[in-house]
Length: 296
Image 1: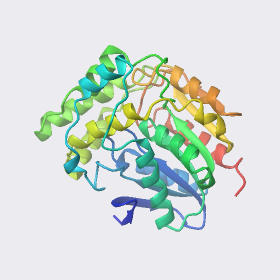
Image 2: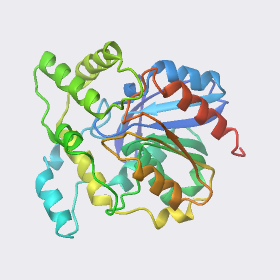
Image 3: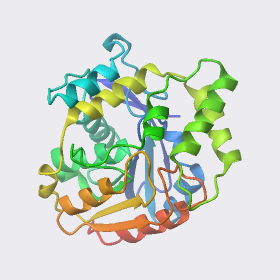
């Protein structure tokens, strides 16, 4: 796959569709690689008139790893937050937003529809705040504003979030299947075959758990975006599952409330699900309808 140098790092990416079509940048979530944006749905978005760009965030996949930054103490970070203290992190969502914008610039994309899921939604929101001139529209999927007053993950979701992954391949696959099952919602069948194949691809492509802790620190250190999101003026779509145990639905509601004129779609029975067939055909169609509202 191709890569570019941008914002001081090397970013791995790939594209789908005609480069003259509407640019749509897909930003993935915590610990996930760009392959988590299911290829079938990327092609469907391309068939719907988009030039789809997906990429690995820093510290994951085949993008630059920041080994010299060390491994953060996440439990200490949560304790400091509980005491109302400010965190320091190797990088924050601001840096990750600048990575994404750097990728667009390297690809000579002046403006794009920006869509992020989970942490990717937080990065997309941050792009809208820091680089409003780069957006045609914003889509935030099962994400949040960073508002500390919102409900936390369920204990079960928090447990799998913080559990260290095993190093052996088969154990890692079973570990990741358990993560996927824990954060999925009850409204759609769990596609174990698809999730198992994704777990294998993740492991074989790049097993690098150290980066996940630094990405989580980037989220925790970024703080509350809610007041800043009031400045977002592009068409905004917020999608969330009613049964999300990792980022409860209140996070989506808070995001839509923060951004003037935002459209909120709550999908009943959806959790923090990855792009298996479940609700994702509906999400692809919602993204397509949304981008058509924006003026190029």
